[in-house]
Length: 410
Image (cartoon, rainbow, N blue to C red; front, side, top):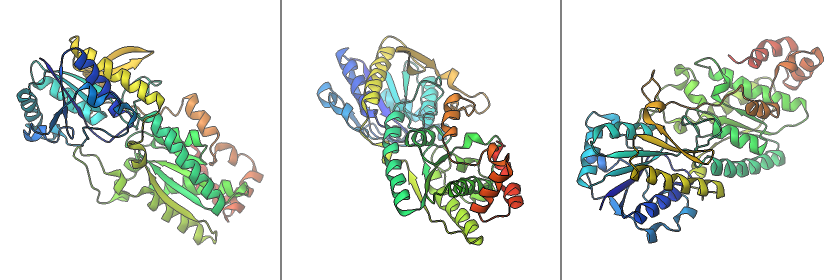
């Protein structure tokens, strides 16, 4: 009896259990033994083969409704040391694993690609999972979990919008998305948030905290000019990675070397800057900083993600059984499209490529059109500049000098 191993790496995302269920059922129907490896690579990299569970159809037939992961997950990085991947390969060999199905984002995909080269005879397939939606797929193909996370995030932002209107305050909400702004933009667009700011809109490799604060201050001023003292601004977590290193200071990093963005408290930093700027001019603005992300990751998957994940799990298993390997399994236009690991790599970094938001696309331009933020047309008529300057308690010339540069992406 051949054996398929299943493990989950990275952060949770709605739909993981649906992938595990479909993969288990299809594997068992083909006479395979199925092992769920607890906590991603955590135990395998230590040579520990006790933290596994044999999965059967009866164990998994209804778990597709549930959020989280029945075999848990971790960010343990086996590629961190030269011997790490070798230890994982040896552990899988001792367990008798012939096929390995990994479920995760870019870091897990990278580890899977290295593992495929290390253990002869092991075939590996990767299922793309991340609410960040930043894996290298065609623009119209989302990663699983993204749709459910956007829907739940939309409901949370709607509540904040109501609170903002009721109490006449602003919320600065930092939304998960390490590299790309898909999640913040998806939630902001669905909820009709006042403004959503993502890293991709800035062409320069680095931006200052003051520039980012001015974008938000400009949005608040424009909103005040419209007679409203409240709003909700969404901030993509990845903005912190574009901030000048001098702004960040000492930061914590995870096992893959990524900055722990949640620890930076981006919303609080910007709240303090913007509040101080308004206070210095005698303008009273109340701002509350919040983070959003952990609330979304273990949500029960919606209908789309359940169906999508069942299909991914089923075809990932079929792909392995039929001799496929070294690829990320995708469903495009309703068909299985394996993407070889080699095509996913960025030749410059040697890492998995990141899919960013295309700020030139009609989709982004539609969302931008509905945002309340300073735009080129706001500086084209003197009466418009005068009204905005008055709302910000600024001289028109000073308002133009400070805020006009914001309308060009640089």
